Length: 128
Length: 110
Image 1 (cartoon, rainbow over the protein chains, first blue to last red):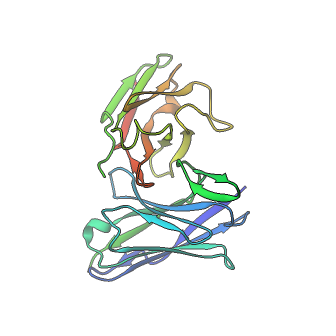
Image 2 (cartoon, rainbow over the protein chains, first blue to last red):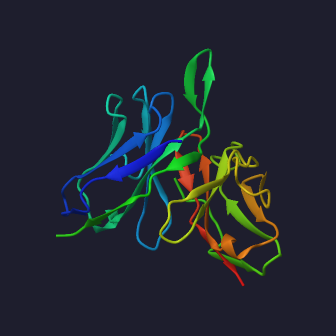
Image 3 (cartoon, each protein chain N blue to C red):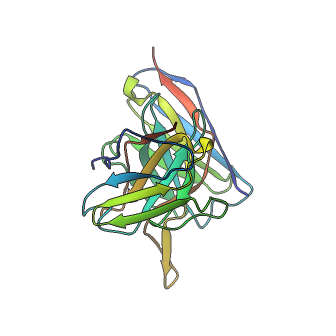
């Protein structure tokens, strides 16, 4: 059974870069898509973006200019960077495994989306 | 991309059935059979309840079911139990291969 654990600074200053890591244990990050999702305090969930283990990414259009998701297969980790943060970026950040894909003649194609394993989430506050 | 539309709240008594709607457009809900539903209790990570409109993951009670008609998907919970009280979110895959969430629905079991 896979376990996901987010980690990173709980406090980031405005205009700086938020950096988080998701450590995956109990399985390999190969063969799947991995997603970051956030939830501002008292509000709903917002999809940030996903990455495939081959490196392909896609991001929420509203965050695309500030987001980078990457992975380190040797460490079984997925990373999130969000630049130029403001108070509006204060949220609990979750990583999750995304099983929405299919294979056509051995080629993986992103099709569909659903998140079966989630981390516990980590609260990041943007404040000076 | 715009968030999917869910009712802010629904309620029901133990034993009753409730339905939560999730309305999008032809670019998301209506365009694919890739709607999923999540249950979130306070302070906890969301839990997958339904995927690909109607499929239930192993371990999820058969009291939870999903459906879709046009641009609106629905989650039905039958035989309401106190532990079903939680927030529920829908998601959909979109035509630009992104993901969009609904605004969430708070379910109260009276």
